[in-house]
Length: 266
Image (tube, one colour):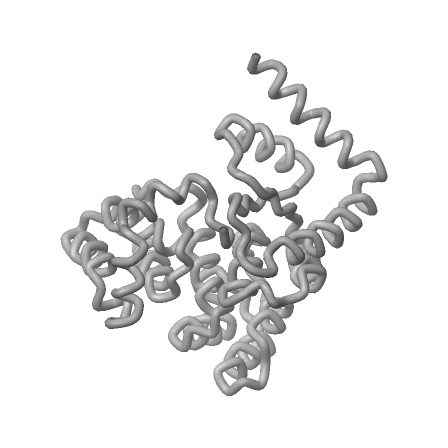
């Protein structure tokens, strides 16, 4: 299953995969009822409800138009009371970057302008701005520009899971080692975890990995073509870096800490 975490399955069941596919093919996302519902709530001043309507599409389904709409909502002064999983400004910047990494034209224009002016959480940098402008012409890969982009808050950088999802959006016919190295260059560390795990195991893994600055990427139990090879290559590269950072016993240390948490639960 292509980077869809277990908690996302109820959402997909609710939406209906076939229904979403029809909208993706027959109309632009901005004409879909999913977008219009959030837009109507936003225009009525119901910012929290608009956020709740859009967030699953922006965060888990990685839809650029809704990522940009949600970022705009998060940056509105009247949206200050809005509850968000992370700081509103941090999430807004991350969503804008995620859309730009998929070469969305509107996002590229926004990032180029924000990088030059130092707005939307970006530090002013003319070289970064020029790089993002050149992506639209096919002169640069978006990830090349990400490497030279400075942010006011480092946590606004897309997560490794975000980067993996974008790189494998169409297929897993990419080098897992190369994608892992890309995450590492941006200070993001992660391990891909296959299978459908119980919620308490996911929480134990997550809290333990976070202690060492590692993100867990849940991949489900139905791998797509090429996904197993991608995961093995990705994890091998990432584990080598983690050993260099934390020492040769890091894998056993993490496993022991997770097992201790699970034993306490019994």
